[in-house]
Length: 120
Image (tube, one colour):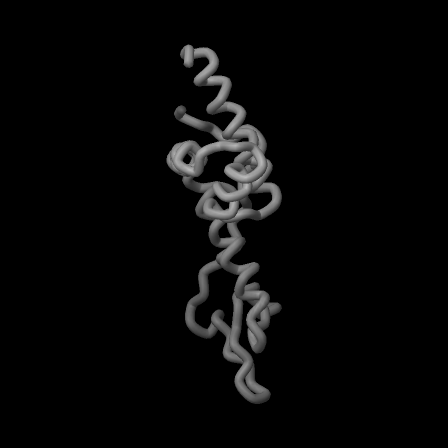
């Protein structure tokens, strides 16, 4: 494979990963989807994903935080505090609110997905 076609292939994998991110997929879900639907080896997807993570640390920190919080939303008995926008557990009639414990905001603004920097 020539350097040009290798770079083109990596760029295509990056684009497909960006599409997976738009569908809120995890790295593992993306690897599986690209293997099944685009015949891309999971090792290649994983390598490009890791490079994207290195080059876009803030985005991926926000992305993983948001994905984790979306998973929390699905847990029965968990609600979001209106005052501080953090997750709280409901116990009987009382709500334990995180801002009583010096809460820090967990909702950073993610960067645009399309056009993530890739060092590859």
